[in-house]
Length: 535
Image 1: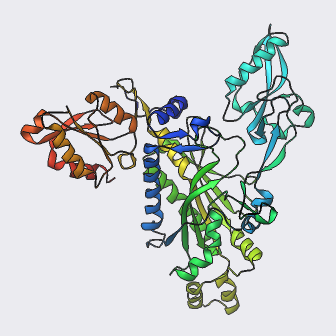
Image 2: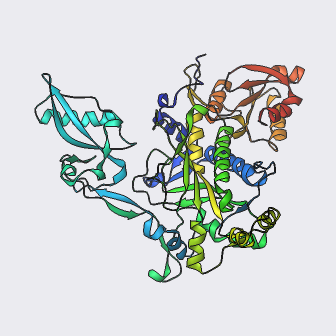
Image 3: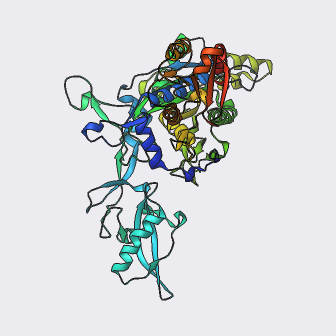
């Protein structure tokens, strides 16, 4: 059997993965029978099971059994589920109404719209008879087109302008369209245009979906679908303090849907208009904030590794100064090497030091005090003999916030990419190598044939296991085809009841990854699964 377990991301085909996701019920295009709607996806039976497994693992790690803090004690985190629609003043205070936008450019020829920071330009150079000359500027979409696509289009233009061969182009040769002087922008050939100079100057486009609350559709009834779950946490910060036995430092965690009117949703479910987030806001004293930033940075990387992701495919990327929000002291992204970004990486989770910006903004706009009196810190400083005025100054503060924020739907994409393993030795030609505990189906239960008492034994085993594990009972088609279906679903173990079972009460267990088959007593199947799924 060929070794495909270390297949590099760039060797994996997104087209084949998307096809498998549709064929096996992981992800469907939304509203497909009506032609779909760009930027929206439905999660099928296997997709929702995978998503729920990741969700539950995050919730257990963050809320039910949170990490051990620097002092050796478990940190304190509580859960929340806030409304998707909040008072519109929320988004004015947070800056989303005035500043949550992307620079957009329109093509006057194709009538298409693009994010300006996704439209990249390069100088195309052609060589003919040893002479190199510039053809002008051509545009491509970052992430949607590769240098090879650029060269293909440049070659067509080259033929129209006197022949020659276009020299190879790399991503390092590209620059952002909106940073070019206007006279150079006029030479840009738009991604879907036939003539240069059709792209307009960039202008801002707000990403929030608008809606109306109540019977009257006017500005007084205007509201927004939330673009992030974080603000619902900030709005409930005081409620949690007043009703729960929490004190600094502590966290509030939330999983929920968010909506952004992305102009160019792309790369399957990587960038979509409706998505789910897993966010936690960690409230702490200003003087301890950097310590907690480093703590959560490392904890989040360990969590991603716990999903069974190859560590070579994960990196930290610290934000440059020009990337940081004006209120942020530091921000780092956990990035993953997706097939469509390889050999580079793309964002998976951000860990941001937000300072006291959010609570201060809501305190100002809502005219509600959100300061915290830190009695524990007061006692500590008194014991240290700190001056009373200094104690008063340091013990009453608006908390700083450390925010680990990740996409649940993006986590689904990562596990799909990580698990996708082509293997020509199998009838299915591919299998999904999920870590067993995250697999949508944990076990397949099969009678070898649908007669001779085998279905009855298999059904009894299935009824025993289904209460503890997600299993599938299947009697249709040959055993080889059933194994192939389970490989594509990522089921780690299949148990087959055959003629020998009737004599010695043993079953065949097939391992998904190795395809090896061994026999174990039927009364040990439950403990076997429990052990294999415990890690």
